[in-house]
Every structure is written in C-alpha cells, then in structure tokens.
Amino acid sequence: MSLKLEIVTPTGKVLDAEVNEVVAPGALGEFAVMPSHRPGIVLLGGGAVRFEGKTSGVVFVRGGVAEISADRVLILADEAVTAENAGTVDAKAILDKLAAEHAGHEFVNDELQQHIETERRYAEAVLSAGR
Amino acid sequence: MANLKAIRKRIASVKNTQKITKAMKMVSSAKLRRAQQAMMQLRPYAAKHRELLESLAHQLIEAGEVDAHPLLTAREEVKTVAFLAISSDRGMCGAFNASIYRKLAEALRERKAAGQSVVLFTVGRRMGIFGRKQKVEQHEDMQDVISAATQSRVKEITARVVQAFLDGQVDEVVIISNRFKSALTQLPTVYGLLPVAPPTGTESSAPAADLFYEPGQAALLSYVVPRFVEVQVRQAILESIAGEHAARMNAMSSATDNASGMIQSLTLEMNRARQAAITKELMEIIGGAEAMK
Image 1 (cartoon, rainbow over the protein chains, first blue to last red):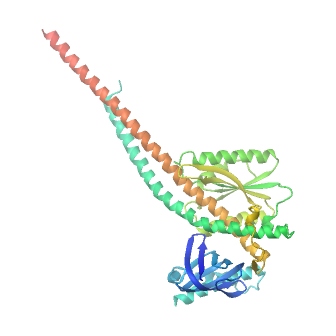
Image 2: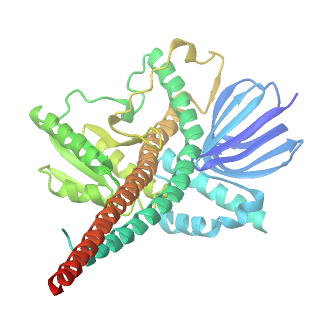
Image 3: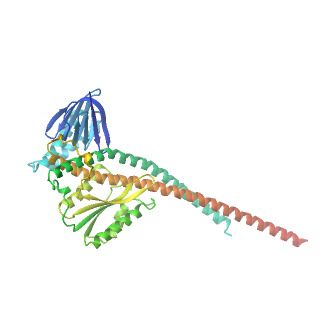
C-alpha cells in the first residue's frame, strides 16, 4: 500500500506522487505520515516536506495545511517549490526582510511569532538546498 | 452619386481599421488562454479551502461556538457597506465594463435608500474613473492590479479590505465583478465577501467525526478563514481578467466582421459609381458625334 502525496498552491499543483512515507513540518513540530495514518488536518509551518517511495525528494513549503487520510496526503501550501527549483526563490531577501521588520522586537503575539518562524524556516530550508 | 475617389479612400481606411481589430483579436485570444490557465490553476486550491472551511465552521457551530472567528461574525446593524468593484484597465471590450457599472450603480442606489453609507474600493483603471464620479462617503482606488495580478498585490488588497472590516470602519464587504462563465458569456455578479458566510454544505459533506486537528480547530480556522477571503478576491480578479480578454476578443471579432461587410458594400458602391462615370462619358462622346453630323 502506498500514499498519494499532492502539494497544491494558488498557482498550481507542485507535486503529485506515489510515496511510502512523508515527513512534513507541522506548526508544532515535524511529523511523519505512513499509509493507513489516522485521518486529520494539520497546520503546517515552513520548511522541507520530504517523501520517499517510488519517487523520493524534497519540496519546500511556506506555511499551509495538510489534510491526511489513510491513502492520501494533500498539502495546501501558500507557496511551494521543489528542490530542483529552489534556486528561483530569493531566500536571502526573505531573511533580510524578517531581520529588518522584526529586529529587536519581543514577540508580540503567537500569530506573529508563528508567521516569523514559518518564514524563517522556509528561507533557511531553501538556502540549505542551494548549497 | 458619391465620387469615386472619396469611396476609394473610405475603403482604404476601413481596411486599415480591420487590420487593427484583427490584430487586437489575436492578441486577446493569446492573453485569454494565459488568463484562463491562471484561473484554472487556482481552482483546486480554492475548492479545497472551501471544503476545509465548511467542515471546520460546521463543527465549531455545532459545538456552540457561533463567533468562532471575527471574520465570520455578522454585525447586528450594517451602517457602512464597502464595495470591492472590479473592472478592466482598458476599454474596447464591448459591454464588459458597462454591465459592471450598471450593477454597481444599482447596488449603490439600493444601499443609499436603506440609509447606509458606502465605501468604495475600486480595482481597474476604468472602475477608478467611474468611482470618482459617484457620490460615496469614501473612495479608494487600488492601482496597478489588473496589469500585474501577483499574489502579493492581491494579498495587499485583501489585507486592506479585511482591516477596514476588523476596525469596524465597514460592517459588510461586497464584491462586484464579472464572473467568467465561458469565453462567450461574462456574468456581472454581486456577492458578499465579509463577513464570511461559511459555505453551507449538505449533511453528507460533514466530515467523519474521528478526524484529529492539530494544533486545534480554532487555530486551524484562524489560518483558513483569511486564506479563504484572499482566495475569493484572487479568484474574482482572475476571472475578471479572463472575462475581459474574452469580451475583447468577441468585440474585436465582430468588429472585424463588420469591417468586412462594410468593405463589401463600399466596393459595390464604388463599382456602381465607376460604371456610372463610364456611361456618362460614353453618352457625351455619342452626343458630340451626333452633333458633328
């Protein structure tokens, strides 16, 4: 038995693959999904979605939600980019913008902190792929 | 009988116009294809968000949390209503913009009759010009949207409108735009954006009860609701752009046809005039010869 992994963004489908395991960056921490997982909905942060199976690879997501069912993982991402195209994202600009806007601030609320974390992790993951 | 030279000039000018309309038609059909693609790409994302919102809102309302999210809460009294009206940047697209103007004017009349004040947000250069002529309490023109409908620009617009709603500046937000039904029909439509009315699905769409939610339903809802609003705005703009190109393509197609018809009838007229001139000349020659006898 395998899982169908789909990653959808507002500008189209980024990935559609048959996999055996997915590791995704949840808002509360990384989690893994294997076939016959209990169905649920998980809020995602930023970072790398890794998958293994017939096709293996990495896709970077910039926040979103994942809908998990026994034979399918559907990720609705605000933005997503495959490892091959990671070079097209200006991750440095994202980090610079974060540094400029939130430098020295104590975190004001959970939502903002969540947003900053998501952006930072996304940018760092993309950067590390480029190296 | 019109003179020959004038008709020839006329034909040449109509032919030139036809060349332009033909070129515009081809440009529009290429742009339409791209716009339609952008529209289609958003659809699966939009549909899934709708579904998510439906199931989350359904459960929270079942659980008695009616005011689960500020964007979902309807105001008791609507004093100020905001319209987000979307048109094209350019003309030459048939009745595309006129039909939106009419819808907006109608809606404005209705709201004013109900004693509500109106804030107008306009997208598209044409709508900006139309909006300036309306007597409304406040008019904000969002520029450079149609020419570059990027994700970040749409985000800014949505943020502006949502902020106005959350600040209590407006109590309701309504979108007025052309919906893309097909390449032949664009439907001017008025529909509510805020407060978000959770799409009411049938009972069968209610999710299985044993779903788990992480970090929790409320946290997920506060992610999904703003996204849903943004997707709706984005969809409206993309559909309007696709509709604009479709409308222009149709308008230019019939303009080209009309030009063909005109050239045909002008050619006929020209031939008649030429024939008449020849006949007249012949008569004169014959008359002259007759007199010599």
